[in-house]
Each structure stands twice: as structure tokens, then as C-alpha cells.
Length: 289
Image (cartoon, rainbow, N blue to C red):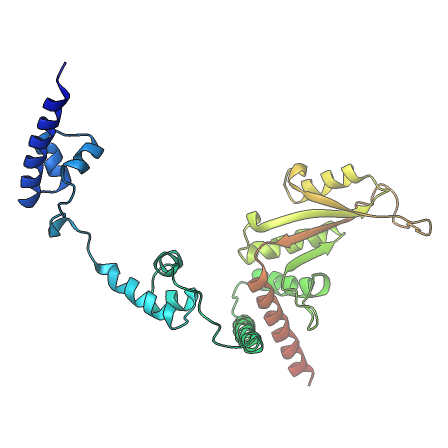
């Protein structure tokens, strides 16, 4: 068993060698390999008080960004403003300046609300511009289809949707493509029209609407077979509730309720439909005039 004094002497000898290597410009990893000391804590003790060589220090590329971020924070900039100015992540900004005091607001609550409302107004104006541009492009495309059958289906589909589909109102903007009908033939023509527009079937969701006193299960199977999906893939059925005053006239085996067809992410398609319909109406008015 080695005497503790010998262990101390061995450590001091090892430390002298480690310091010499450190001053010669070696990194901790190189000293570790040279002295075969693989215990991290022991290795740190061997070079305690000796600064690392310059070449091992991390690059200072972000130091300038950090200093600039702190300067901007002291001027009262928000995290979002600093992020936009420096082009770095918000998490980096937080890490660099979180020890600094929170800046005083540079505007009153009323001014903040005004700025927020102005920002929302700009956003809505841009959304309106994009909508109008989509409608304009759709309107200009009318008449460009060369295939007669495709053109007829296209025109029929636009008219069919505008007659039976959900439409956006000035007082309630709903730019969704949702179509509801109880006629299986109408549903098939509508789906063929969506195929013509290259709307993938994966984007479609189907739901049955029917009176609660009807044969719901049979109706669900019927509509699922019509659109060629498994009945389990239908969204939850909407049941029309009955009251004591309800008088249901649509009875019999032929009653299957309505099918609701929704196109996911349909806002752009809706704007195109509105643009197409607007052009059809304008052309009709021109001919009649």
C-alpha cells in the first residue's frame, strides 16, 4: 500500500509536468493523452491556475452580436426588435440580455394599442390584396379551357358551388369550401369538378347530416359507398334534433339525409371560385346588355 506522502509527491510531479505542457501550448485533451490522466476532475486540478492557450479559445464571432444585443436592450429595444435587427434567434437574445433590467415601455398603453391596431390593419389589407389578386387571376382564366367537356364541367361546377356551397359574407368572412346536398348525382358531379381542379381526395372530409329519427347507419353506409370511402372514415354525423312540434316530411327508405363535403385548406380555392363566378356574371351581363 502506497504511503499518502508518496501519493502527494506523485501528484506534485504530475502537476509540474502538466503545467509545463500547458505553458508549451497544449490543450487539456493533449495533456490528458500525454500524461494518461483520464479523470476529468484530476486533470482540472493538475492545471489549476494556468490559463488555456489562445488557440483553444472559442471563436468570438458571436461576441460582437452579444455586445450589440446588450447595447440595444439598454436602449429599450424588445426581444423581437433585437432579433429582427441582428438576425439571430430569440433564444440567443434572451440568453445574452436576461440579466439586464426590463426596459421601460417606450410608449403609453394607448399608443401600444394604436400600433397593434395599425399592424392588424396592414395585415388585413395585405390579406385583402392577396384575395383580390387570386379572384382576378381566376376571372381571367375563364374561357382558356380548350376541351369542350372539361369546359362544360368547369362552368357547371362553378355554378353548382355558388348555388349550393357555403359563401362568405361581408359581415362574416368564411372563406371555406363546404358543399352540402342530398342529391347523389349532384354530389358526384361536384366531386368530378373537384377532380378537374386537381383537388386531391386526401383534402376532402365527408360528414352526414340527417334527422335523428332516420336510419342513420344505413345512410352513413350509402354515402360512404357513393364517395368510395370506408364508413369509418366519415366524420361524426350531425343529427337534426326533434321537438314536439317537429313535422318530418322526408320519410321512407329513400331518405338518406345530406352529405357535407369540406375541402381542407380551401381559402385560396374559395377565392378562385368567387373570381370565376364573378366573371361568369359579368360576361352574362355584357351579353344581355
